[in-house]
Length: 63
Image (cartoon, rainbow, N blue to C red; front, side, top):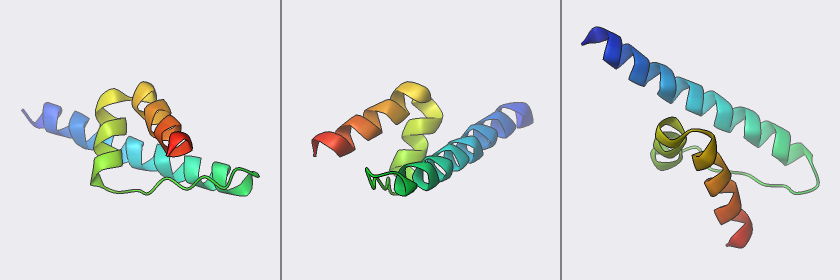
């Protein structure tokens, strides 16, 4: 039980770090893409992983 909770917390922290690093990287480019770090984006990236991150970026570029 504790192992499952630890894995979920680990995925959430990793998703936060990925979004933060992506914001640092994409903000310095000419695209000026800033993805807000909120509960929806963190949960989407933590549960879906890389495809979720790509979906967020594509949605940002479309809208």
